[in-house]
Image (tube, rainbow, N blue to C red; front, side, top):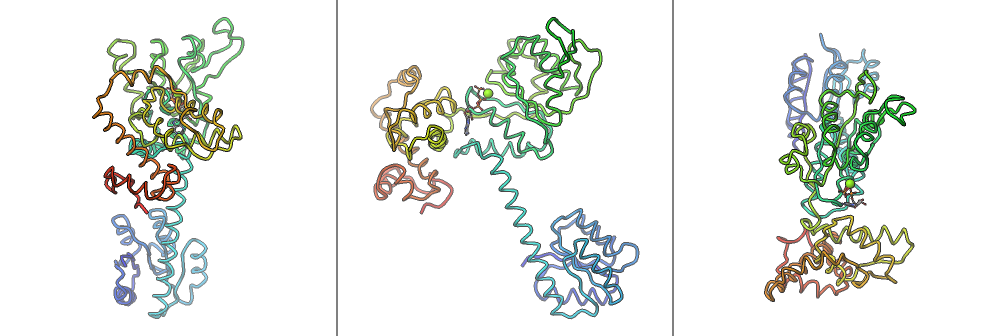
Length: 461
Ligand SMILES: Nc1ncnc2c1ncn2[C@@H]1O[C@H](COP(=O)(O)OP(=O)(O)OP(=O)(O)O)[C@@H](O)[C@H]1O
Ligand SMILES: [Mg+2]
């Protein structure tokens, strides 16, 4: 069954007995003569269960249990004790042992205890795994996505969340950079301090300096009292420097110093203060170009981009369009108390054809307006008001008939796949959502060569 058991006893007879009984049941068994040998094995291998004598010279069974549990949290423990030491066996149970056996031990008794302990350990592991999954789902619950592109962004977020590394979030306007920054903060299990966001482009240079680093009373006209600044306000938490691409050179220099030295000097003060803040920064400016043009310091860029997260534009992850559209429909239908249950296939297809230069923010605005305008129960195409300039841009290419057919095939494919994905692979539900019958969905899928290879990872029912 693949369970790994470590037997620890200084008595050879006992080790032999346990080894015989357990290997017969196809458990994988390792043996140690002493607590310290067991610890050595624990450093090298993982075990599901340890069966250990309670009274051993040097390292007792209790000590071994504490050590072992601190190294392998899920390992279960069964202690073996002589009659005279039942009192300490009870203590051991209180300290986290699963069970104890009293010498002389019988075969059946051993196997029963082992079986239960392993089952318990397995359940505990499962519960822990489920909790961890729940945690990640809840943390990212606001980020709606179906595309592979966003999935890798979220994977990266999960990987870096717990580190203290500075993260630079790059992406066009409206792609969800702030959402990503919040997700990084929320997924961090250590930093329970505040999430403080500052829009660096909104303030003139000298105000930004004192906003960030603070100032002392009288540092400049208008500084009527001390201001501790956002770096200190975010202490123990995360400071999100939004629109970092446009900050003036003197602020860039100060920022660089703070990131290097982890100290701030409030404007007008001679004293430095230590800061404990994780810094995230975002920009939609092409920093490579800004650096080439001498507008952005290269050293600051390197400091900020210990990790870089690139949020792709919406047109590069079209699989997200339908889920996002539905998400915003539900959001605004609830907000405006409108009975809207669906988006018509024509509207969905228009949504998937539009290039979305303003990305998710634009999609949100378009859907919000559509929700307001739609009588219900569906959002129909005329309710969608796209930006005319973007439409003309898209029309500039004047596609030929052939490419037009190809394009609409592609669109159809996208819409179908998005609907299937939204329905978790359930065809009946997807057909309903698209407003077509199950059989015409089936035919469409065949016509477009959409089989599992193109389809969602989940099986199609
Ligand atoms: N994947 C997503 N799921 C749900 N909502 C999203 C998603 N991406 C973005 N949004 C929403 O779209 C809007 C714009 O996102 P956000 O403010 O994070 O973009 P941004 O990249 O910071 O834009 P800018 O560069 O203009 O500041 C917000 O209302 C946000 O909640
Ligand atoms: Mg933003």
